[in-house]
Image (cartoon, rainbow, N blue to C red):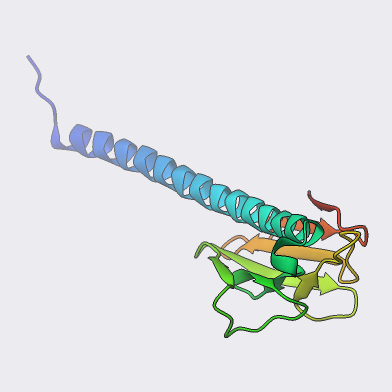
Length: 150
């Protein structure tokens, strides 16, 4: 009768370690991808909320979204004021950042017109994973106010 040798036990542990490493890496990548998708969806819904509130003339204001690298802010009024207590701040996941935005006229605010829902600040917003800079999602805002994502 033959027993299990120390080397056989080491081989089994090495195989298990490789498998665990692959599984853990896969879950980490999945979590990051979900964070990117979730932050993109929150940005889309916040932009749409600003447009709908503007069209409905909620509280007789126009609404907009202010962009920063690690957050975006839903605000009311014709310009962004960081000190206003009605601002709603949405912090982006620590794995994701708004890497760039290219809006007509420059700036970091998208404000919608009250009667039409259109915006003169149309363009694109790019969100990306910080660790894998090639993984991006692009949000497009047309001059008509229509918002979409790739």
